[in-house]
Length: 640
Image (cartoon, rainbow, N blue to C red; front, side):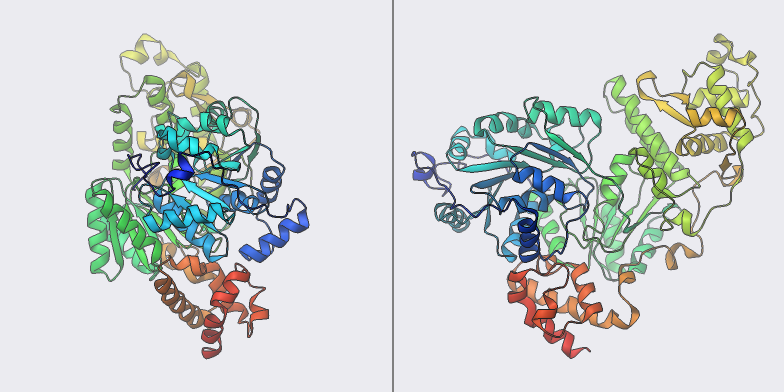
């Protein structure tokens, strides 16, 4: 994805105006009436954004920001992070400066805000002269509520000095995990945010979708100067997403068939290599699906053009490597398919989280096989990272394999990784099409006993060697060939034991200690199995491989994009989509800026007959009602 870049035109000649940059003029937005009460916040939420209530966790964050407190919020993708800093910007007397990593992401958010009647602007190296003049005029007139900038702009001291002379109320940092130097999305320019926050002397709000404890500590240290922000760690559950894993069989054709069955909707297919992205995009095109490849091998301008096309379409599929990540702010992605196994549960969660950000039903499916696992292990070993980093990456991959191999509810296993406990969801492949299981108590006891008798100091390979009685230099040197557990599991193949260990980890019977070279250890639940206090169910040895497609993998494979639309409303929904596309093309904005899928689904179901009735539909605020209401009412009247 393209990113902003610092350049010689950053300040002075960049149409923020030499008087605004080099002079001493302070630009102060005109104050708005404070809206610190709950009623006032609710009224703004409804009138501007068209929502009748906050999503879980949003209100507390908004109120903390309005009260002027430092905030760090870890919220799931699609949990409504942007509203948490956009709404407070409408209640204060100054300007909210938003740091965002990608130009396309900023463009989409500014367009969406303007469509609701909020004056917002952005200053990047790609901003036109006319747009820069518009932003400065809005600042001088006191109209601008939110100013988006990319972190690369902070390389200019003159630009930072200009920011310091604005009447800034707060600093909001999106994708805050980019400040973590060991993170997969590290952006060096994010390191300038801490000094900028101190210079501005204003409250800071940091937002990210995924951040483990180490990353959270790094964000606090680098961004808040070790101040203690109010931390909001919200649940990771995305109940509108259907979760599934499937065995690879049939190559690219398998992926193409699955995508075609989803219909003409927006979707993302992640693949491990550039070549496969190109092949899949071409194959989808031949199958009648509008598709494009996206990867780091393309020129920056071409990548940006393809992302913009995807953002604006409502029936396009993008086939991408992990280069297509941050900045996917499109709410109406109806499916995410992973053609190859991701590298960790964090990567899995981030990628599938780009589906269904609007809260409407969406589908995810991960295709994997033995070659994926071997390649992933090899990449970690050959990465050149320090030993402790490689061990941590192996442990994260093992956790993902546990989720993939688990016979239980996918949502239960996924959320357990993030420390959450939920009941089986009924909305994943294992819940809808349960795999065959056996009483696996005896092999589980064997494996747990082998872990204990070897001192809980060894990885899966050594544990399996002991269980199967496979002598090697290490087992003989350590005397493990004389243990009582030596060879007790020789009747089962190595592949079965690998799968069973993963399934046991997914059930919380054992854990991998990253700090001890991926040593497998026994948990309290595992001890209860050893004491005979609980039974263990496992997928049988002959099924200890990725499951193939069942008869329901496509037809009943979960939440089809139109699952929230009754059959009798499907034609109206499609007519509304056509009208949305026309209006979006006229305005030159993404389709969801007009209305997201969820709003069209509500219109199709409720069929309002006048503007008053339409005002109560989810996602329709006053500005959009006035701008688009009659257009959509005409479609409803013509189709009902």
